[in-house]
Image (cartoon, rainbow, N blue to C red; front, side, top):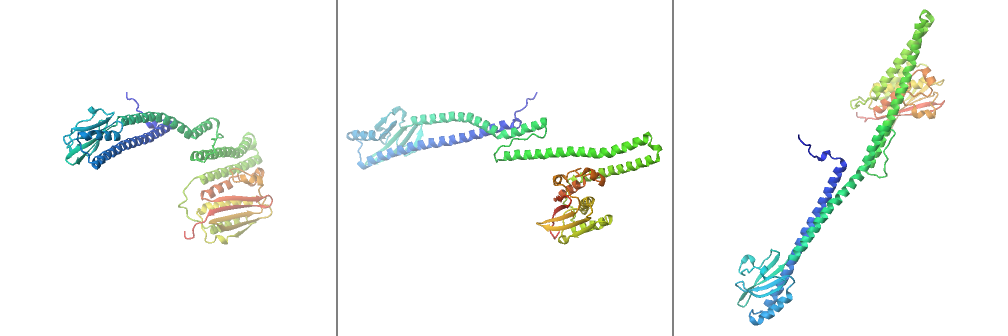
Length: 471
């Protein structure tokens, strides 16, 4: 049986952040220590070489300036000088042409550590090299008929011990860095994921308790705080949408239930005994037909509302001339409502175009004009005015009707909302007209607004972006 392989992708985000942040911190620390170690090692070795060369120059200058003769009477003087310039853990030797030591001065440097190398060996003469923890420098010189070599050997065992101790300290610090970076990575991951965990908890509460739960937003201005705010705003919209949907179902059920109940009552009446009474039969049939027509109109309006809410691309929509469309609608509606006077002020709209189909623009205008006529009293006058401002085409329809109370203005565009339900039922309609108009206007990137005063009239403004004149 094949065992499941370990994969980073299967780990929780918390552990991924912990591992990656720990690895990154450790690599940075290791790289810093490695560079520091190499630099210190090379710098210390270079300093030892500089000191050795300085000793060599000082010895050679002394021999050459004093023209020292390497005979028995001068050996003691030469040794005294070499002991004076010799450093700790260092040996100085003067070799003859055959490589035999003439003068040897040593400070904590055993002779057996130093190899006897002939002075004429070219690769070992005039160079500084490092071998077996010894820093060796040889330099030939000639005084009169004497050819010899000065050899300076530096014991770097203390240097090696220091570097070794330094490397051990770095290793211990590296292990400590792994632990510290792991803890730091865990704390960092926990801090970063805390808002996301809060969102997860909020989603879990929403699933258990309902849509009213929200994420507690912190006061930071970072990207996660912005995400949390957007999540709360989205949940507000979702909650409003569910409330509107529930209200829509309740209102639709109520509107559908009334005509069905009326028709059911009359049919029951006919079934029991009304079918033998011609007057009752005629009345029941008349009422049933009326309620059926009302039910049919409601279904058609619901279908129109559904179609208006569909998201359809409008890129290919042919531009409409609002001036021509308004005049066309007014011409036809004047025939239906011959007792009303429809005044127009459309001069600013001449030559303007908006991105909306002619059919939908006519539907919007007919809905608004139908409401204007329906809720007018004895002042039967409707004004249609067109203006252009800030790249927007505004169509304003004003009536002199009963008006809308200020408390009802925010809701008149909602589905099934009617200011006076009893009067609205007598005058027809189901409270869907303005909602359909709103959906159609918003579908074409427009806006609709209503201003009204009771017993003075209502003004409905519809705004659409104006298209360039060359389109």
